[in-house]
Image (cartoon, rainbow over all chains, first blue to last red; front, side, top):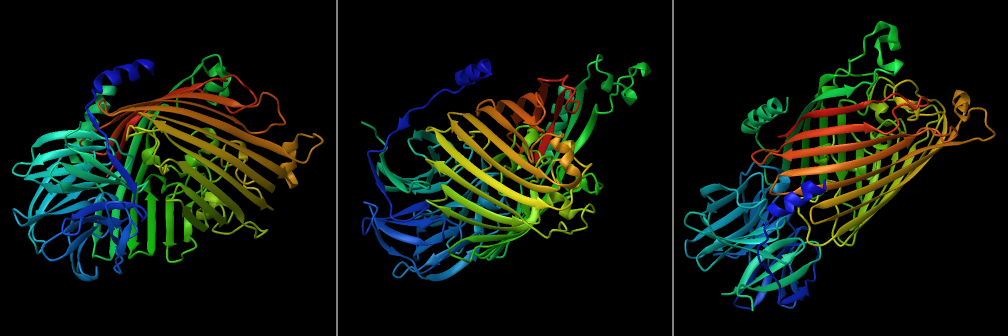
Length: 232
Length: 394
């Protein structure tokens, strides 16, 4: 056992770990994704319980949606409002950003494990497409048009799981809950550009709030952590 | 032998696919399954008479009937969700279909239940299901690292499944989970010809309760290995108890005949688990107190008492390493079927190695059982043995 452990540690080369500079608690349980509303400097969040929240950067809840979904795991601002994705029922729902009421929905057709379905969604303004990602077994990075017609689906294997996806400054950014890592990918060929280990417990949501600053929310503790890409 | 298994594993891995989920936007149904099999080899001691054919050393032939291949599981599982309120599950183990009397640990039907989550106060689960008792019991086999649960929790001493109802409620983000249930008390036999679906003549039920407290995050029942390689320690403590009274025992089906005993039986136990940096550990213990009646009073062995106790302990240490896709585990367990007899407990040391294939949910598993008291004539004869095999989840 001791030899096995020593040998294992030799194989486990460490990578630098990003530390959060600010942490606040959000006012709702089991947050599972984030999206930044730059016009109001607020965040949208979804909870495993099926509700959508808007809150400020101090974590204070500003409003809660009348809409109640199922197992919501991803959220993104998009061309027509707020888009949320339900992992269990493989459903994307468009909410009116004024009142967070359901406008319409699309059922997708990922057939993998129920609890390893869609974990993230993000709108890519430059390509005018949505990117969606599944958690694992396998990790699929998919591209959809604004009517959720599948354009591209790529199996990707750089992490043991993915819990969120974001598009930022020409790259895709993936978050891993199990590995507590953020990975930057080229949108063109999904090749890895960079990876960072982050200090987090159960990171489920990711969004950028400025060119070099991003936020991560932890599912279990509901702690919202802010990181700078360039560490002092 | 090992190379042959690895070759078979690679073949399986290429052909495997993950679970399938169908959904119409409001109803999702997942189909999954598990196939596992192993080769079992016992290291028989030629000095023990019981190891010979017909228990007779004069035959000169050791009894190697347990050195064999075994299909351990052939399970198919359907898990459904309808909206946000209804869940259901059906699970069948086809490897058990031929067994109706001596059902061992479980019958062919391993789950068949409906859950309603529409009440604020609690969720209610109705049907044939696992009893909320013992973390080892509640951990799915597909997440375990061994070929056989420890003696105290493998289903020979107390039932692991039964028909009944469970009310459950989570608090503090599910870090605290409370479960209470009422069951027939007939255990797995309620689904077999042993009871033909009938309760005990007393008509009484078995009552079960369990509380789990996890910190700092939820410690799920399927977390045996620290596959997250946690950056901070995580803990969970579980406390559980159960009580039943029977007018009729069901003897002759499991080791030591403790599962259904005429009279009253109360049990209490605890389990504690921790994980950090790839290490995980478990300690679990149970004490069962029997107040036998009728023919079962013979278990009191003429002593001036109206009760006897049985019980045991399991301690397990695991280490998981992601780069190696491997885990190594050491387990100690003991079990005493009757405390009215001195030196009456069996002890086993287990060593388990698992290799996790990355291109499929497949595991190559070795489990070595070393008996620490092989010559205790008061107990059932058990020998050192090794099991080597494959688990494939699809």
